[in-house]
Image (tube, rainbow, N blue to C red; front, side, top):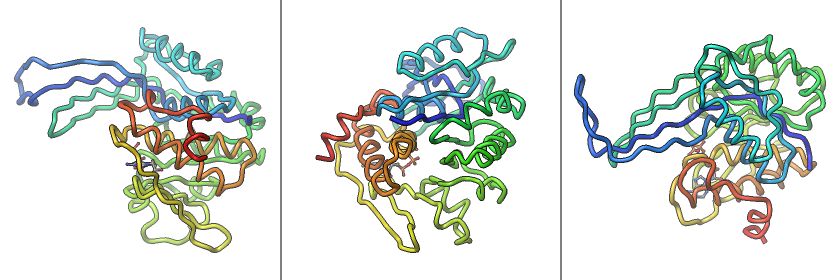
Amino acid sequence: MGNVTIVGSINMDMVTSTAVFPKQGETIKGERFVTMPGGKGANQAVAAARLGASVRMIGRVGDDPFGKILTDGLANEGVNVSNVEPVTDCSSGIASIILSDQDNRIIITPGANDEVTVDYINQFEQVLAESDVVLLQLEIPLDAVERTLVICQKHRTKVILNPAPAYPLPDTVLSMADYITPNETEYELLFKDSNEYQEKIILTEGEAGVSWHEAGKQKRVAGHSVQLVDTTGAGDTFNGALAASLSNGESLEESIVFANAAAALSVQSLGAQSGMPTREEVQEHLS
Ligand code: ATP
């Protein structure tokens, strides 16, 4: 299997379920509370590791108890965490999520993820140079994303940019990525008015599957019909699986077919990381 390096976010998701939301200034009793490891970077690292890739995470956690829990959790999944350094006097990235049947409200505090700086990335030029595939998202500072792309371009390392959560991106960033993997909302925001990056875009379309252009032709794979439980992490599973498969030398089309199946399997369980499948499970589903 190939080497995949993920440069991205590591968060603890703190989820409170409630029947109603509190009004301003009000305190109410919640129904249930759970903590779950998350962050797009960490989720994608776990997805790729379960699928058998040799995965290294470049990111940061806080020096709070969550930092150790998150780092140990990644290591237990087989992810190399020697480039996940704790930040002194800083919290880990936290997503505070309030859920009711009708609605959800989320505050993401980046904490240590904001300390993935250009200087931090520069320490790992050799790691990036030796990777088969590097996978990036947008939950760390944009200048660190850009620096990673510059280093990878210099060493001809393939990069997948998952433009999530989306915001307008400079052409310098878009032009250096080999593949860009928006969902439909991100596509609308970033590419609706331009064909410039058409050959790099791999568009995920939820249950409808995936479409992309290759050698001037539009291609598509249909979504798999599965028992839907929770789509959280479907996009992260897709990206981790795409990176794992490309790093293994499989073609773009083979890798998209594989990632589409892995992502479909992931929506059959609750939570982002818990439903991520193994390579054997994906192969069995495809056979
Ligand atoms: P999320 O934010 O829910 O993690 P996303 O919005 O980033 O996902 P989607 O395009 O919704 O990305 O889903 C990514 C991929 O996951 C799809 O291209 C498809 O392969 C798979 N997928 C998502 N939802 C379903 C579903 N209901 N049935 C089968 N496959 C699905």
